[in-house]
Length: 136
Image 1 (cartoon, one colour):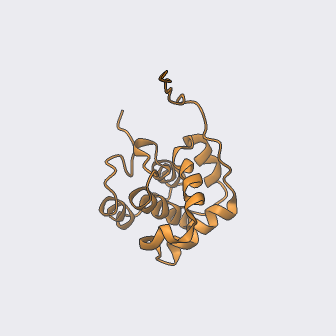
Image 2: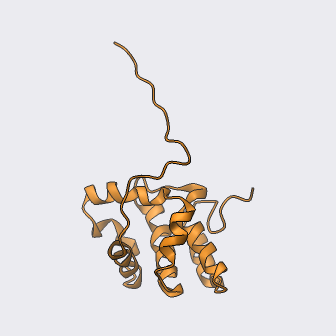
């Protein structure tokens, strides 16, 4: 029986996933409603499996997507993706987490994340790269 080989996608490949403003608004609403503890209950399993590819979108894509949202909405996206990475299987992203790119967006806007948000991220994640990304 022949054994196939597995080749990982190159780092330059963008996952084939459509990101709509409506989808991101749903994520924002989940955070606004303080429903992050039940994050997995808002989507059928198939959708969760499909949406997990969002966690690996390149930073340029996140910077462009963030242009459509105010700083307060970005804070809620940060909260959503922090919780999603911890609570949803397959949503782990490490140093390439959308949280890193969204925090950088806030800093570029001159509205850096509050101390409370940074502490919240640290207390709700085991991802050692959050909120600042890799230090190299």
